[in-house]
Image 1 (cartoon, rainbow, N blue to C red):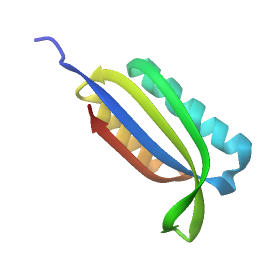
Image 2: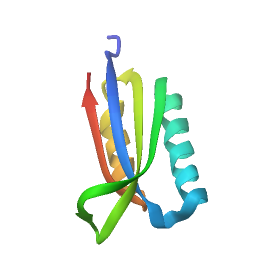
Image 3: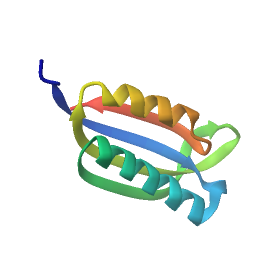
Length: 96
């Protein structure tokens, strides 16, 4: 049986206290992870933005959006990795 594929969009907010190098490392880590498990369509970095409400006492976050296609099992694994990665304040994965 063939694996089904789908199109997804993922958004993450990274803690700005990691500094430029830490933020860049997280963006590259997830770009590589998504590319290895699917087809990356785009990476859109919005940069540092003020949060609507404090998250873990932080008022600013670094926003990154990924558009990709992958098999239907991968988003669950990606969400698991988001949740165990230090520096990720919030994450969201949606099917397009």
